[in-house]
Amino acid sequence: MKSPFLSSLALTLVLASCSSLSPHEEQQYENLMAQGAEPLVVKKPAVAGSLNLLIGIGDIYNRQWGAFALDLLLWWPSVVWAVPQGVITAQNINKKATIAHYTIGPGRDQGFDAERTIRPASPSN
Image 1 (tube, rainbow, N blue to C red):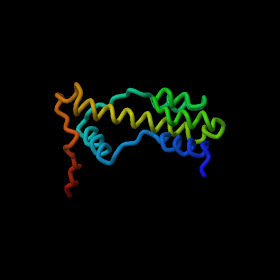
Image 2 (cartoon, rainbow, N blue to C red; image 1 turned 90 degrees about the vertical axis):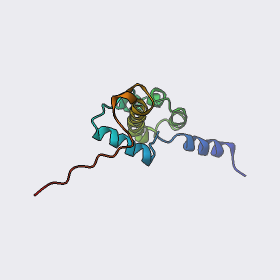
Image 3 (cartoon, one colour; image 1 turned 180 degrees about the vertical axis):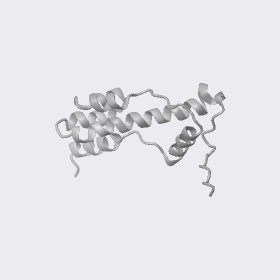
Image 4 (tube, rainbow, N blue to C red; image 1 turned 135 degrees about the vertical axis):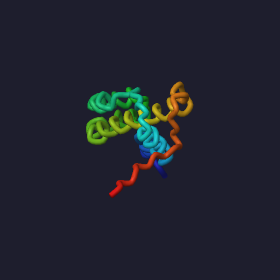
């Protein structure tokens, strides 16, 4: 029989992962950057990482409630993973905001196409 604590801990661990990008989103972001689109900054990675030194406050800044709960639960060792987690999460939030801006937001009329892949020109001899 599972204890309620272990079940709660397992659920918290599942909910606490970094905000991640799908391979398709990674490709869309790379395509936009290759076309010269300006990345949006809605969350500052350095701020998120620094705030995670204070028992998950960076998770609150990033609105990652599962990660915050885990950091609060395991406050003293959480600094080991919380600081890089906050930085990565903020970077991914910015990438998602950039994709949304240029695909469905106000930047969609600026001529950038997240689906268009720009390949570097092959060097000529």
